[in-house]
Length: 319
Image (cartoon, rainbow, N blue to C red; front, side, top):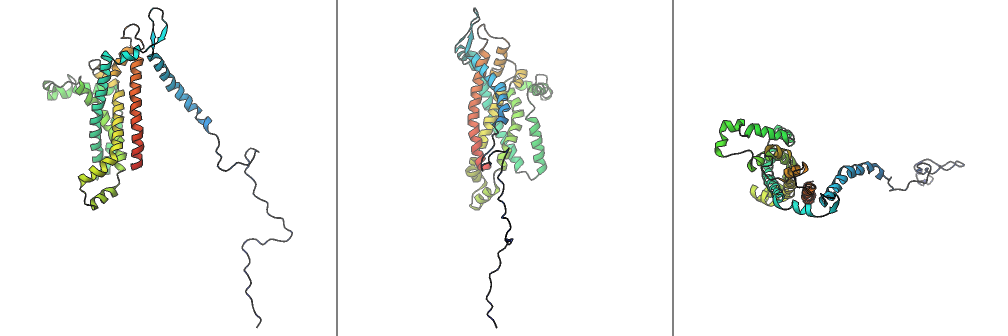
């Protein structure tokens, strides 16, 4: 028999035909008739954000610049000319105005501490609850109550716990020395909307605690208390501190609730700014309200400077 040698298999794909034209190369990506677009090049999108920066400049930059300029400007009552001076700033940090600033800081710190503790305990109870409906009810109620503040909240507390309020008359709270128009009354009113706000703030952080961490701690012989002391609380600390800072800023900037409830009986910086804007100052101190506002802005910037790093650190652990 003839020797049958194995021939190589034909290559896959179309077989070139003699005399046929070679396939044309792919056309370059030409945009608008210009040169081919380079890989990795990105279109310029900065014109899209120009309206946003214009909005910031008009609605935030202009008022902030006016406030800073007025805080360091004093009007001469005789000539009406303005001159640069630090009298407004120094006056806002002395006397009754310093007392108001201290009172606002003390009220904000105390309510922030209470709201952080109470809100965290409520949120933890919701997270560990076996009933999903409870979480939905608490989250919905917290979202509503966190936005119920200002004058409506003050009137509600006056009708309930005021001198002739329903609860005051029912339980004779006036005999115990309780007064809604005091520091204690302000704390109760602030906690009404700050505790729900803390619940909404800390819930995502508590959800970020992985169950595997607790199981690993239990497999190593750690008790529940040891788990929280060495794992849970250290991981939650940035989130809790960030929530406390947020509570402080919320209480520090609140005005309508305290203005309607206690008026000028409690020294608060927000009420003093309102009085100064209404003209209740001496001649030549018209810009004193701007100086007090500048003090509040400085404290708010310090609060933001503390809160932003805490949020980033908590996001690394719980993200």
